[in-house]
Image (cartoon, rainbow, N blue to C red; front, side):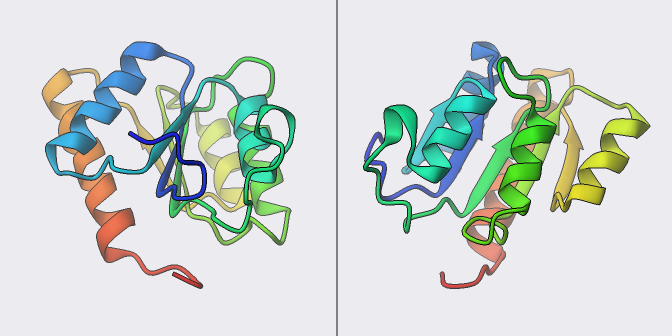
Length: 149
């Protein structure tokens, strides 16, 4: 994991430490965690992306290749984070993958209406969670092509 805010491939937005640690462990298993920043709420995610608050002065030209976004976050919800990412021309092309425990149709529909690239419900079992996150990392970091990268 890196705190070098200029070279970020993954922005992990997750308030639950256990889920964040499992995500990092799964990505490490496939050597995909070199440049990950973990933020613990929606406000911190927006500060990171737009270079405000604690991240003021960060070079915002270096955007993550993918955002892994939980929906149930303190301060600012994941849905609001998604809305702001997709409504700003500076960040609208960043792939956003919702990785959440919510299976609610209303959440799924709203996320797709806002432009989410993928919606995945967190598996309950450890092995299944590791498998899903590993496959996500492989696809979004190695196979998927995004503008300017």
